[in-house]
Length: 352
Ligand code: HEM
Image (cartoon, rainbow, N blue to C red; front, top):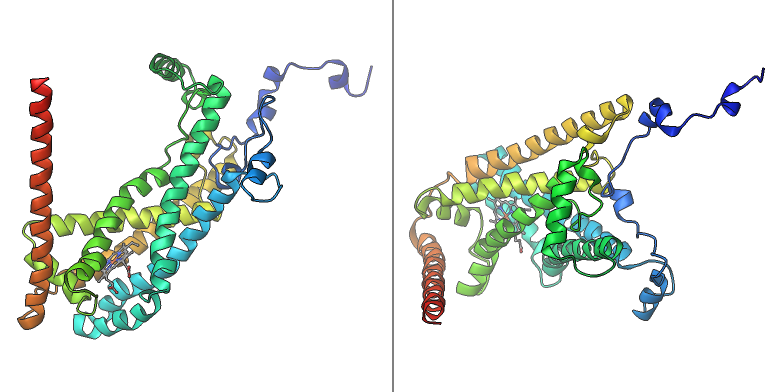
């Protein structure tokens, strides 16, 4: 009788399910794995040649390597401005409960982030680089998936529909190897919602003063308060609440993902190992608590103190009325032109 009977009685892998269960499946878009290039297909040229042709040395690093790093470091750079901005627009107003006392801090730190050199380096370029690298990564991943699963030909609508219906009816939805677009995680989704909210915030607080006044010297917390007090209905409340909630959620969870602290997407469904599940649940709750703390602080200072400070009087109130008035008038004209264009297209279509 042999001492180790497993050697002579090998078992099929399905019968050793328990040992398989201990493997913790990690989705492809977990930070460190997501950054890796997929190995080339047998009929594909290695990435080295494509990067070398771009003049990016002869290493095996492809565009995904560079784009993931641009996305990560642009977020860290913008984090510096975000920290200052949270302090100026929420923490200091919360401490002083007065705009005239809080305003000098904003004006002081503006010297750091609003100079000819620092504004593009700390604010403009990081935002632009972060958004464009994210979209480029998504498109490259999509292209790689098409090459792998459809041999490079763009799949027709029937193929896409068939693959999605057959995969959703199978026991494992996430096993759809025919999925063309990379997974839309909460961080990705919140990023696409955050972008237009941030763009309109920057337009009102930075671009509008430049267009109407030529600079930002009269702009500060009182300008924001005036906007809240003079804009009809709940628009600014809704816009700022969304900006804070979506923006803080995206930034905190995204930073945790870059630092490999956030649980991988779909962890609650995919993680089987008890210790790993416990660790990931704790990380998720810690992140939710951090988001609630930062968003709560921003809402308490920005909405609770700044937004409720009321309109500015006298000469300054007139300057602010001029700026907001210009914006609403321009918006009215843009809207009218858009409606006119739609009507023209409609009448052209009916006539054809
Ligand atoms: C209630 C909350 C907020 C208030 C009261 C507020 C207020 C302001 C003010 C007064 C400015 C003009 C600053 C200056 O000219 O020095 C500004 C600009 C800006 N804010 Fe906010 N903000 C809030 C939330 C946010 C959030 C959540 C973000 C996202 C990170 C953000 C991003 C920006 C950016 C990128 C600029 C342009 C800065 C520049 O180009 O110099 N803000 N905001």
